[in-house]
Length: 106
Image 1: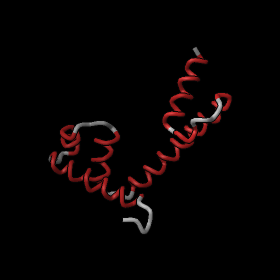
Image 2: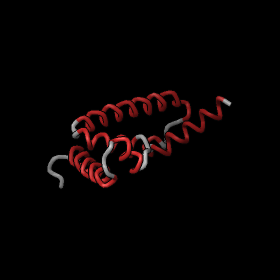
Image 3: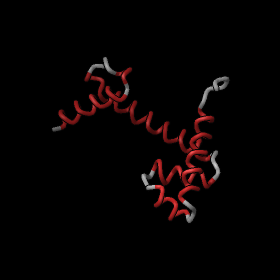
Image 4: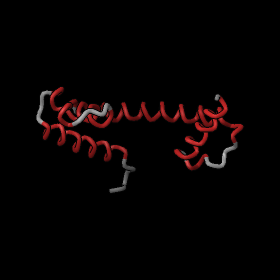
């Protein structure tokens, strides 16, 4: 069972990161450590980016895009209209996109 799970994990990591496609199975532990490290770094980066947004945008994106709530559920929890949630998500995503865009690119 352990071997099957290990091979399935390696296949997944290879599919999700094409640059690792030719890495031998013997390096499975290194692949797993790399994947864990990248996930932690991505999480930290996302938190930093989200912290730059106004609370209303941050909350809407968190609830709908990250927590999986519907627009209606997020609106009800935040006590704002569905339109306001949609607008907050749109503006927040636009701001996040601009924040990660390399300088000099438009």
